[in-house]
Amino acid sequence: MSEPLIHSYDDGMSGIFRSNVVHVLNLSGLSADAATERLEETLVRLAIGDRVEASNLPAIEAASFEPLLAEFHCRVERWLNDSSAIILKTSN
Image (cartoon, rainbow, N blue to C red; front, side, top):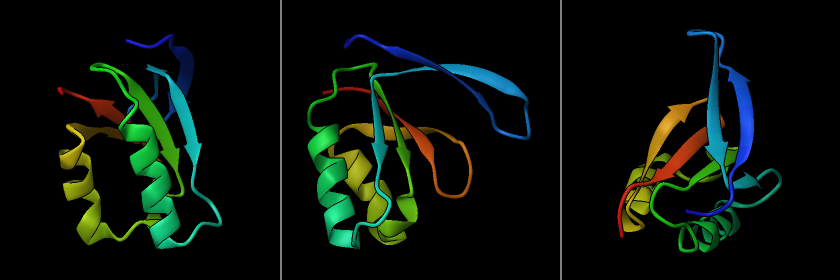
């Protein structure tokens, strides 16, 4: 597991929660292809148990998002809002 950054979030529904993330990834301003490529570059480097906070995910097409995560053995741990999520690496 990589060295974590500790963030606190208020998701507006269940109150404040804490999550250890190792990367903060902002995809704003990128095309769908560029956002997907940037996310892939990050996911491939994650160790099991690592989390990445990815924002501006609507740049990535919804139909390809879940299969992309599955390809890298990741899943959405928690949606922070409509465009940001905590992604967790679950296995190799």
